[in-house]
Length: 292
Length: 58
Length: 223
Image (cartoon, rainbow over all chains, first blue to last red; front, side, top):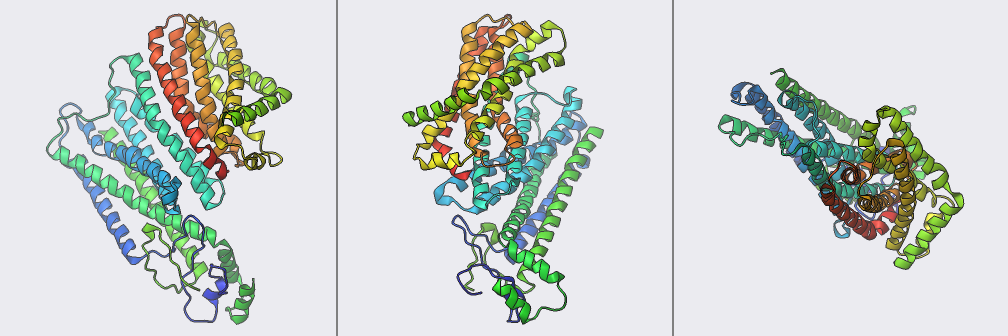
């Protein structure tokens, strides 16, 4: 098995020899499948961020719903302002921006590595979740405030279009393909979406204001937010950003594992077949597998 | 106020469900990897978040 | 590059001329769309006249999707795509050629649909040159982006369902701008309001044409 092939075969894992080597990587020309084993340090980082995110979110909810006072103008509805801009900023700027930049970095020859592709994919998927949260929370806030569940202003519309573009990206990634091919395709789609979103936002802004004059359907908070409300708002931003980062890390990890399994599909199938087999594995089984 | 509760509930539930799904997915994949590579694997020194390579000479 | 573009455009248009798919399938589809819109909006002529600009452009968008699909599928048989790449044709030229061919077909379709809209919906056009310019600019934008997305999805078996989903949101600014310009150019509209939308279309066209010329080569290698 120690020939030119760079994949560790099942034989080495199940064979009679001493402890197996960690699986070697499958070489591709644009970035190698990293090890599927997560280093303890990165595991700890992820766990810490996760705990901070959880604590922060709980704190935000507690402060937002119980501790802070109702607003003079908006009443209790201001409480939604503690979380809605948070998810919106994550979905529209953090996730989308990260996906766009990662896609660009993947396409750029000097920095081409499947790492960026995985990062972009993770960012988009988590971004979709936050995007849906943004639209729904915004809509829920809008109903008692403006009287409508939906308004065609630039921000809401752009968010909806971004959702559709993200979903298109994810749909495209589902199409079976070589990792590099899929990465390139996805990167291009992300790039075009990144170019189009500002244009759409701009156009819808015109489109709307031309009809409704100076109507400002602005979901933004008033400038006079202060005291405990301001702190809660800030906490909301931070907590939700941490939630995003944690989800990104886990989703990225999932991407790594999926790619590794994809590259070692044959070994996986063999392992599963072996585990169905009768009796313990002995050298003969290993030899047979090794010869395959 | 029920709008506020509805808003918070939606966001929290969606995020929680997604988080659980992520963790479950990762666990399932890690189990699959363990089945392929065998139960004994040397800890690797790379930081997977950096996506760098483990090159181990066979 | 320009010579290659002319070559490719000529090829695509000749294929269209011989097979007449655009004329016999896409155009009738456009007409059907107009009829269905009429059914959807009810017999009130005033409502239809008001909605005419938007309906026109939506019909154009749908026809664009079909035209792009056709443009891509023309090369999916007999390894024609690989043949094109091996022939040493400049990718930018290939892109422009295909886009021009699609644009040409779209212009003809738009003429047909415009006549249909005027006749069927009772739309009254006051500033014809704006209509014409908006159609030309919009067509360029649709052809530019559509050819890009066609190339991106050319290798996929699920192209039929994926291409509309990917392409139409990107084409939304053309729909917005085109509708606004038409509304400005019709009876009861203010032409001045349409001017900034024309500028938007110019920007949109320039941006995506530039992207296409530069990136078409790398995109092709993906498919």
